[in-house]
Image (cartoon, rainbow, N blue to C red):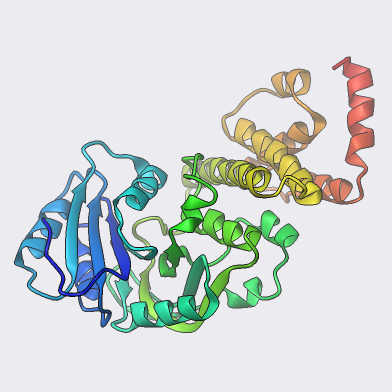
Length: 340
């Protein structure tokens, strides 16, 4: 479905959804009500099994406003990263406003994000949010800017949470410069923010809440409570963090091969998280000692202690050794002992 706009397209907005029929109507209408001329809106469903796409279609067919609307439904579920990569092939605008299918944009959100983009020529612009519960009750303002201020690339490489991804607008060069995200188990915010830093800190920020951010649905889950939930949480987190570090390393190598210290740290973290993943998949101690590096083994020990609820001292020690550059000595000793 395509509604012709009387304005030339300046930017695109994307509403990404999967099985969010309870929230999708409110999210879409918050985008349709934006005071922004020349807006193309992509309503995209990732193969939902509920009524999400039907609601999208009904709204698109009944819409009679100034914006251009396009509908997309993935026949097969691509997963979040696959869906995100596809969106960049569907948009017409150079700049893209993101709106998850369970979050609600304020009416002036796009105008304020756009103004910051024009002021800074940013690859990524983000803002604060007001958290709401699953039922829509307001919880309070949430901002990550205090963590992001004066952040160096080396420090950012260590973090597994950066800006609030749902608030972002992106220039399409965030993909054009670096290519598609190839690690399916990571997320947009930890990759795109890092890419914008790599490209010369091309980041904009609007210091106020511009959307209602829903907690307890979509990719924002409640804290695990039972042992099995905690175990699944550890397993998922280790997989996501491993994928994130691998994608960041690939982006570093592509954009600037000279970032030796950052790449060394990322290589170290990849080994640590490989060990964590193996621990959370219940691999045996013997298989880890025989076949992997001491760094992987330290990650494995930490993962085992995660499952027992113990303090993560092996990981803390490993990172200290890496910072002091002692790990290379340990690796040499290990290789001599095990002839690897």
